[in-house]
Image (cartoon, rainbow, N blue to C red; front, side, top):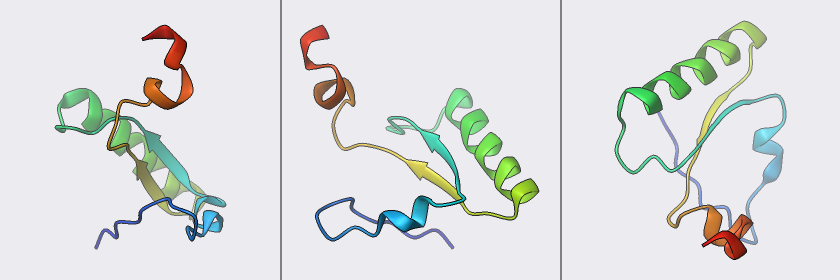
Length: 69
């Protein structure tokens, strides 16, 4: 079962250690999103790690590249 975390000040970033991560704005899961999620799941299975979907409640460029907007 999936767990949902908010990456705020109290977030335990060790959850990412050894994990395979699909990174994106999963505002609706279309075929491209499904592909990324399946890749993370397959890599996690091979590496015996967790699979994680990292998403945003805003467009990532607002945080990482605000000068491009």
